[in-house]
Structures are given as structure tokens and as C-alpha cells.
Image 1 (cartoon, one colour):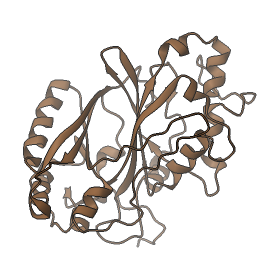
Image 2 (cartoon, rainbow, N blue to C red):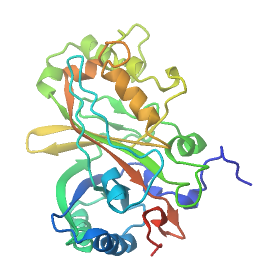
Image 3 (cartoon, rainbow, N blue to C red):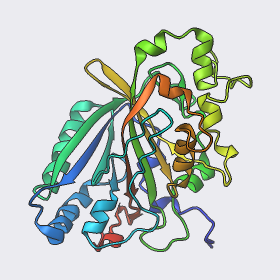
Image 4 (cartoon, rainbow, N blue to C red):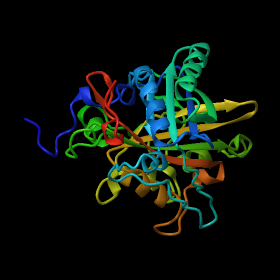
Amino acid sequence: MRTDSAPAPATLYQPGILEPVPPVARYVTFALADASGGPAAVKEALARLAPLVNGSDVVVGIGPSLVNALGAQVPNLHEFPDLSGHGVKVPSTPGTLWCWLRGSDLGDLLHITRKVQKALAPAFVVRHVTDAFRHAWSEGGHGRDLTGFEDGTENPEGEKAEEAAFAHGLGDGLDGSSYVAVQQWLHDLDAFEALEDQQRDFHFGRRLSDNEELEDAPETAHVKRTAQESFDPEAFVLRRSMPWMMSMQAGLMFVAFGKSFYAFEAQMKRMAGQDDGITDALFKISKPVNGSYFWCPPMRDGHLDLRRLGLGTA
């Protein structure tokens, strides 16, 4: 028997959230069209989308503005906060609907994008598309950022991953859902390459050569700024980030799933110097250019569960 503190059963969440990152992916954000047709047309569009979503190849997130437009409520859902200050910019760029398309071939993802786009039209229009890829994948299940450093080393696994990533004890239509923070970081690879080896290691708080954490790293080191167990309460998230590239610009699509936004916000505030005025060294070699929050509905009988938005399951 489940208790309110137990993780949601595996059948309730979109499975792609727990699965390893795919070889390639697309992040597609949609906005409501100027003449969206009102709540009825929006619900019809979401009903057409639902059959395309198995939660694995296509993971869907709903923005706060869309929930409000439908006259619905989702506990703990709010817009991404602007945390700029202390010499760094952490912008808020609210989104309406977000799709993480996952696969092994970009051509296939293009066709999936078109199917999703047609299902949502004319109520929704594509606002932004970013293609991403898996870089230097290891047998241990971790990929590398374009700087060469391993990404997601401290990710929780197994039951701890479920506990961190999914809501539980909130009731039908909410249990198994997830709150996702999405940020696109633009790297300054020239600035990174100009650093000496020790400076690079101190920026991250780990050695590039063996990924070992450095005890003597400065307080600005990324590892020290974001140590998940150092917060009260602890701030664990499930990271599913992937590198992205467009022409000669590149960086990291930072994607963090949680049972709420608390853990991500706690880490991001400390990185941005909101706690103690000390900013993360990563801001010297990279910067976030956008930031959005979405609610990823749970699954029900293999279909997207949109009851909280006033829709039945497909």
C-alpha cells in the first residue's frame, strides 16, 4: 500500500524522464496563436496531441500560462523567476507548451515535430526549436558537456531518482507528474579554452582527467555551489541535460526534473549569488539565455493524463 511519502508508481510518469538521454533530441516550445480560438479550441488541440505522446519518444510539459488560460490549477506551478543580479543574468522567458522529442535520428525527429505541430495547429504555433545531441557517452550512463566535463555525476538513481523527480501524495492527475526547469546555456568556448588546466578544474570543482571532486576547490566552484545535500532540506533534482549546437554557437540545454521547483531554485539562487553574494564560476565561461518552467502531466493507462486541465485521457 502506498503512503503519501512513497514515490509514484512507474506506470504514472512519462517514462522518458527516467530513461537515459537519447542520441539526439529536439526541444520545441509552442505559444498560443493570436487567434487561438479560446479554451475550447485549445482543449481540442491538446486532445489531438495526446495520442502522439507516449511519454518516451515525446515528453510534454505545460506552462503556467496555459494552465491559467484553461481556467485550471496545478499546485506549485509558477513562472520561472528572474534571478539576475550580483553581476550575472539569469533571465526568465516564460513558455506555453514544451515538447522534448527523443530519438536516434534527427530526420525522424523532424517528422515527429511536424506531426506534433499539425496536431496543435491552429491554436498553437512553434516559437522555438533547439536540436541537441549526446556527447562522449560513457558506459556508466553519463555524457559530457562540450567543455569535456561529465554532466550529471551526482544524479540520483533508482528509487531516489523517482523520489526526486516525481510528485507524490497530491492525488489523482498529479501523482507521477513532474516539474521541469529548462535553461539554454550559451558557452564561451574561447574563454574556457584560454584557462589553464587547474583553472578549468577549479571552475567546475572536479578534475577533467578523472572527474574526481576537488576538496581544495574555491567556494565559487560549481560543485560547491550546487552540492545537493548541502541545502536544508536537501535539493536533489534529476538532470537530463544535453549539449546543443547551432552554426558556431553551442552550449548546454539544462533540463532538471523535480517533484517541485524547490530543489532547482535553491541551487540556481546560490549559483546566482542570491544567498551569499558569491556567484558560480560557470558564469565566467557560460550564460543562460532563457529559462522556463513547465509541468509534465502524468500518464494513465499508457496515455497522457490531462484531467487536471479539464480533459479526459485519450
